[in-house]
Length: 468
Ligand code: AMP
Ligand code: ZN
Image (tube, rainbow, N blue to C red; front, side, top):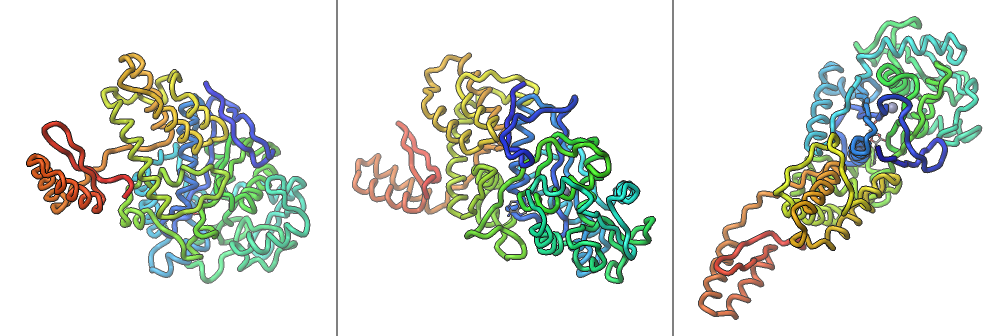
């Protein structure tokens, strides 16, 4: 097994991640299924996917839970807008999410629990919290008493006044509407009393009809599927406070044990200095990117190629650059195509050529450094000079990295436009007639259309220009 190090938001240090048991338990906060996930969301899911792949490659045996948030203010509001039942509405967006994940080559989690199917588990947890004095009921709703949990703020470092202001600004926005009856502004809701606008979306509880608040689902489902202490928990950086802070408080108040050993947060995808989000109207979905002529593989490359702790600016130029880099990697794959791809992670890899690129992944998941090292190293190897054995070793390493990055590296089936083919035919004819001036002129025309001609001794080929 190889050691992976990652920055831990809890300890504010880069640390070796370690399993507490046989398997390495991982929890990812999943999508709220009220619309299509945007490519900002996918930055987070893709980085998490590379993490899982690296864990597998390194021998960690990860077991992953990623939830579906299918009951909250937004899902209820939007299902009512279109006159669908909550379950039909959320099922539709869950299916779209799965289809997008498939196209982006994101591995499915081992379990994918849905909040609406775990109401009983959430109620049981809230009952324990009320029983232990960490939560109180008020007018049919239940709140977590933040002042009763001393460690509150340990993850995000919010405290005192700041906590109250932020709780109102941030958590408040998500849960405020019916929270005028809290003891303290920073207390957060665990159970929401039924209100007229909820329609049919309510469940029975010891405190009357209602539904869970948003935060409790992740604690209840993580503990059900992964145990009381989870090895690693991740999400976008916006979830650090209040969502993950609240998860720690309610879970640890319930069990008296540490909830998570390693917290990982992924920085945002930005557009012109602002976070990509639905409310700002600056978001793209995978379909938008495909309509612009890019493959899901190019989007994947683009979104994983920045370091996960740095915000990444999303531009069409960035996508073009990703597409070109991908073509280079595809060519490397073709050079090694005589070797079949190994069955990662069951096949151990010996690192003789591309160890620096793999090492970068193990060192705080440094994907940009991995890619840089891969291009540098591969570019310096004269593959034609390698004997069969060494070439096979190089192929094993290359395919292992391809697996870790989750890139498909499929050669595009680009059809050559008729006018380009006609120009290319005319050029070859001119060359055969030794009319080199005309041949050069035609070559320039072909290149101006974004294509290249490559001459062999008795024939020629046409390919799309990488720099166009
Ligand atoms: P949501 O569906 O809003 O609960 O978000 C799903 C995941 O996407 C969470 O882990 C968020 O932190 C993450 N996320 C939301 N916006 C962005 C963004 N612009 N860049 C990266 N991750 C994001
Ligand atoms: Zn969560």
